[in-house]
Image 1: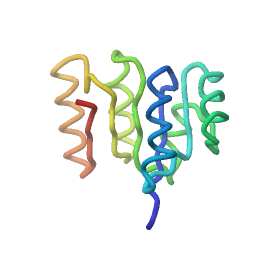
Image 2: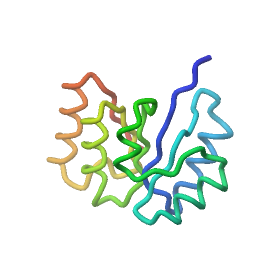
Image 3: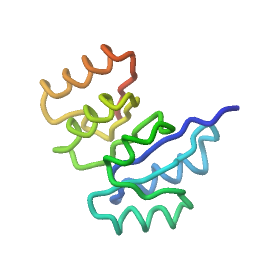
Image 4: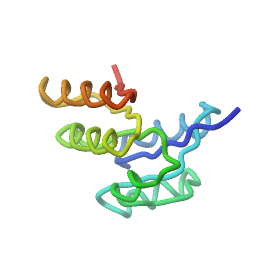
Length: 123
């Protein structure tokens, strides 16, 4: 089975359970890289979960191997990161809320649809 390569943006508290599940539960996923505005947080998670790369968000979005961006940033950054990931040709999954405003949520939905990409979020 081919593994789907994932990049995680946001390495705060919630990232621990996502990384555990992505690396130990879902065999189809391979976390290729992590990124955080505070690089030390990303480095700590990379070491803890044996993740190959610590990137900036821009580097993560530019990596052609990453297919899905898991957006675990603070809610105010959800739309910005999701839209940038979609523009980079990546599917997105975002921790709740999907977006802070209805307008931002619709932008994400519409951009994903226009690019033939998937966008989803935590319930």
